[in-house]
Length: 316
Image (cartoon, rainbow, N blue to C red; front, side, top):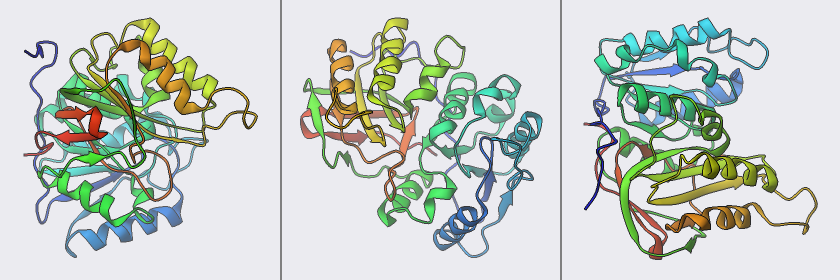
């Protein structure tokens, strides 16, 4: 018997249909123009020729390591939320900056007009905010700047999710499992360091009865150990039913062969939970692969098969 009383009913955004607006936003770091152009071309190859694009005013703005000041980036998100027509919001890139905006954002705007939000890395903060404050399901998936070099199957998978389809199970390409079995729950997906930064705030998503998916980039194994230890010590992982681990990109040991690897750290730390943990899924920062995951809808983790089965659509 499952206990999901902690999780409110999830609002599903409208499914992608011909003529639907696509908002491209930059709520975090500054956007590289060539990567933006390449991503837009990739998007146009998938969407109809007449698909309307709404480009945020700050898309090419640079203010230090942000795509414009906080108020400008928040205003661009509010403009996308306020669109009365069904639409999709895709983030141009990650970087850093979204945690600074969460207290400024008005969840009522998103609740009134739920929209699919697509992104990962720093966008983890926005996905958590949407679920916790507005009960809106989102998609942990590639940012626009990735689309130009992404595996075609991953692009098709993303658009299957946006269209309200339930794709086949996602199988870890080089997976290993710690603790076998099959578990179900809503999926919470994000970047490990961004999730760690939300601990102690009102924006950290509830994990009891749910399944966690995370990836990381450019963090040494000892820093991954620190982040996971904080999640464990704070109690936020109490009641989690399973964990899937994506790419641990450029998370090498400081000295080759000295100390545990990033994956060894993950398995050692999360082994204390006593729940299925499966590594090797193709989502994250690695070049060429980033399989989109639903955030907030029900999934089934089959640890013995190293497979994640999506049980319901993430749009309606």
